[in-house]
Image (cartoon, rainbow, N blue to C red; front, side, top):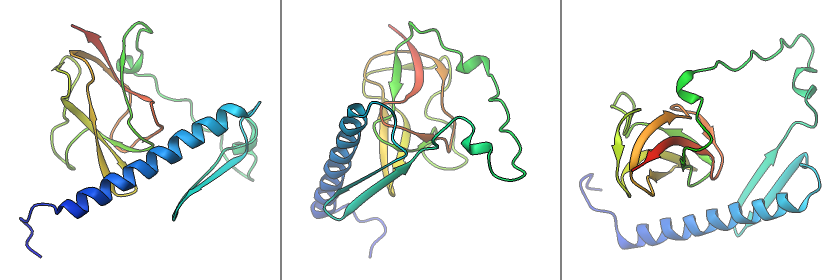
Length: 165
């Protein structure tokens, strides 16, 4: 197969169908979780041939119960991640792994202080081998980077904060 060949319409349609299934799973999971009085220990959703399963610890001490486990270190505080509540955020379009650069070793799409315009790509979320662009919905100046390369992110989780223009 020619490496320089453009994607076929069938591949684009398949990716579109996959994204629709992923959206259905996400919205279904959010609806189900909203209906529980407390967070469940696990959730499994199947749409067609796609199954997504998530499990959560049951109590605050459960993670440290295993024999010889050291307590988790306190999260490092970084001035860049302390964001005023008034700043709007650019959010994750999907559950997945967040990347700030188009490829390993490349410069990040944006840095603190960069001006972004609506539609500008600022990152990527990888979900099941699909690279989903993260774009700015409004113009402004990036004030903080809230997630780093390789961080797992949830749907609608803030990735960057910005000051609107």
